[in-house]
Figure 1: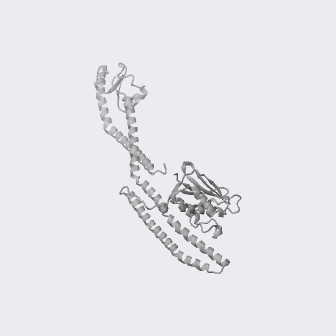
Figure 2: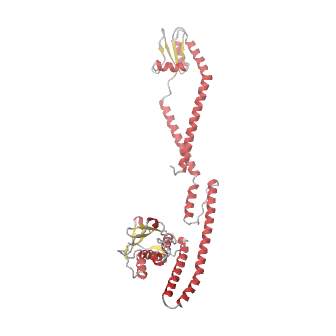
Length: 416
């Protein structure tokens, strides 16, 4: 209820209606009381005097019966000579009815000591009153429903604005927010679209600059490597070549990350046998490594980009091997089907693992769990970032979890 603006507005409207009704009834009561005291009561008193005079002294029962037959009144006569009541079943004990009618000016005492009490005919039948009550309740409920529907229609553009903000936050600027109405909410949608357009322009400029720098660095880097090959063999030459290779891999990763930022459009999909792809990557790139395979061969091929999946799997296995050196058990690559038909491609190591704080940031670009930026300790922190981009481009999800011991990285592909 606190989260729903529509219901809060409806409640405000209902409370406002109840408050206005209470104020109106209180004001009307004061008006009626003032009018009764100033105008109606003297007229009623004069009319009752005329009715009492018409009955006469001593009271004439026949005249009282004629009045009862002519008017919607009840008459009760009490005195030394006449005892008569037109509706004995309707009267309550004297201590109640006499006092009430006396306050309304409906009781008269004749000169010979008779007491004449006038009253209105009993209340309306209960059946119509109940119907009126139910109709009133139904009308109030219908008015509340109408108010809710109107408020919901009035605030409907907020749903489109919220969905658009979620898309923009995820980096999807292809679909702007369509204004539903030309009011304040429509103006807000236009302002959000303008902001998203500006953000897209800045991101495109940043991406273009990064691509240009990466492309421009390739040529001097290639020349530097050629020149390094001419250096005499030894430790300085090997260190220089390692550094140049690391720079080359870094530039390649940056370019690949920017290409994958385009999402599914950057992929070249085909039918891929995931079990065969895992075996190919392990046999060609990790032949000397100790790896366990738990592959479900019954999983049918999926539409995916095999080159990008190999990049993802290579980075996951490389990360697992790097962080499980000296562990009691080798990393395990598994392929299984999860509940709901999704396919899980997972790589688990049995190393020391990471802290919960580190786990939340491991897929960020250039984030590393250690402060030293050495290649042996984990590169520059683009591996898991690229894995996340590859998974997102395939409509999948990369999740990292503490396996205790170790870390498990799982890619959940959508069902085929």
